[in-house]
Image (cartoon, rainbow, N blue to C red; front, side):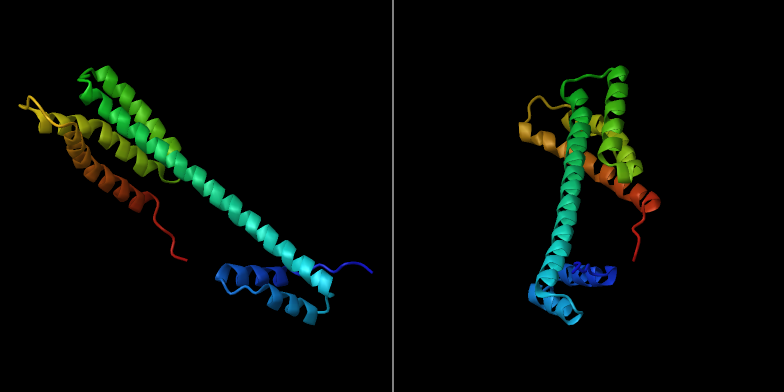
Length: 176
């Protein structure tokens, strides 16, 4: 006797039940028993479908984790690159060009799905942080290191707005 395999519709029903949170292993086996499968075949088929779904969900989660890691790295590369010049008092236009290239590349590779907004935001960071830094610390002889976060926060606001603006234009969310 040959083993029966479930139809795509039956597999989709099992997946839908699992994803919705109302999955019952025994209920799915009973459905297959009613459709003419033996107890062993029904258990194997449900187990196989659930195992494949779990593997797909795990792989998707792993992929999302790698994307998030890439975004974090890109964010910190842009942040550090924008901050190095003013903090170490590098005023060369060559440094600005190098910082711009590094930041744009980091933004592009870190946010491939939303690269236009990320690149525009990185450009804003590279050009605006030195301005806010020098504006905040001009005519000051001493400061607390924690105060370095103030010009950084003042730079994040317009950079974040630019990021959201360009993403709203070029990457609108799809309502399904």
